[in-house]
Amino acid sequence: MSSVTKKLKTEPLTCKMCRGYTIGKPVYEYEFSSLDEEPRRKIKICQKCAKREHGSRNRRPLPE
Image 1 (cartoon, rainbow, N blue to C red):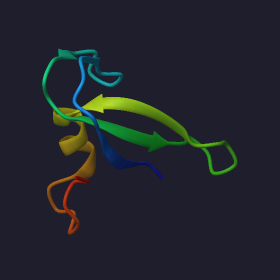
Image 2: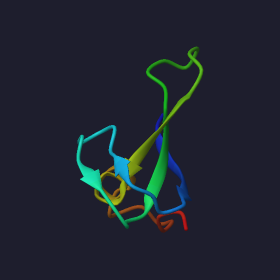
Image 3: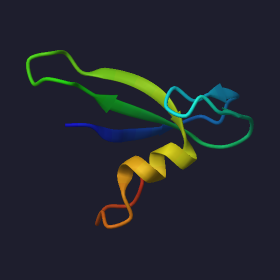
Image 4: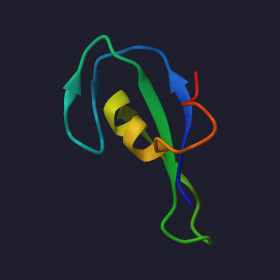
């Protein structure tokens, strides 16, 4: 299972999902694991990827 866990400080970022470079936009932490036995890995992603991964039908808003 994977999820957007929290919002980090605004900083220049090269997104690990889309490889886009952003400055001055929110950065999110994304936690995922390919198998249940593996430890969960964390990466920093941009706001666009965070919205896509979180989903529009999710009841909870994106982490603030």
